[in-house]
Amino acid sequence: MIIKRLRVQNFRAHSDFTAEIGSGSTLILGPNGSGKTSLLEAIYVLLQGTSFRSSDKDILKNDGEDAWFRADLIDQKDDARTIKYNSLLTNGKKQFEISGKKSYRLPINARFPVVLFEPGDLSLLSGSPARRRQFMDRFLSQSDFGYRQAFARYNKALKQRNILLKQDNFLPDEIFPWNLMLAEYGEVILSKRLEFVDRLNKEIGLVYGDISGVEDQIEIIYNGDVLCKEKIMQLLSANQAKDRILGATSFGPHRHDLRFIFNGFEANSVASRGENRSIVLALKFLETDILAELSGRQPIVLLDDVFSELDASRQQLLTNHFSQYQTIITSVNEIDVDGFKIELES
Image 1: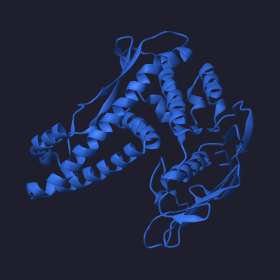
Image 2 (image 1 turned 30 degrees about the horizontal axis):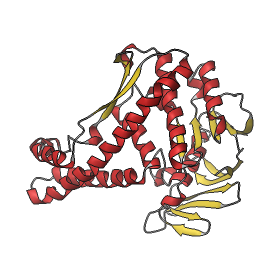
Image 3 (image 1 turned 90 degrees about the vertical axis):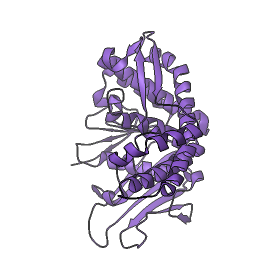
Image 4 (image 1 turned 135 degrees about the vertical axis):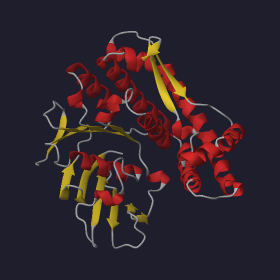
């Protein structure tokens, strides 16, 4: 897919805005608060079915009983896809329309791979474990339907188990089904995360070397117990008394993390700012290329205000690597991009 045109209505800062998108690179230029990221968000929702920022209601430009938003995308074949949300609808759901077919969820076969690179990703190594889990989960949910399904069902079971743990009294039989679901889908999540980390470890050194020009040793370690379904069940039962006190499930892949080892030491302790950012660039390059390989389609790349956080050499590497993909870039400052330019006002 190549995006040709995007229109958003009542979408965050935009009342009604239409943009022509280049087949190569497109720069969206404007001050903070002008709605640059909102345009990327609209594309992401149209291609993936969910926002990377917040809930549907938060997207609404205007509050009120008749609040609504809409986004439309036209591709190079003049095929259209639309997303609509209207607060008057009793089901409170957004509606998708792809080639004339309507649904309340974006069908699996209509989802298109997207790689999002935002400023917070540059703190991937030093940021929270949640951000590193998100890095894995976003990739795997796009590239592996089995993972996406297991991840959704795991989180549903986790939510229900945590609700039960907060209650004063519940019977062991009530929590058993949720333990069973967490064990079953947790095993799938762990297995597929490990495969992903193994793939990264095989390639990240070479990609990092191309970026930095230095042959440093990088290793990614999955930081969490890797267990079979039966063992997960045992540990959930063993931790039940503690979980009841906490009111939350203390064990499982929702608590796991990644460790980055740089020349034998924790990267966050010994790697310089530039070395950290080169590792992150290598991860984003690998994410894009592996996703293209596994999906058989060229992902749309969304770069949200990351150029200002990189020095000139890394900006050039970013531009060169993503030149083979349709890339949409937001920036406060002018960037030398060979392609379309959209200018927004505050």
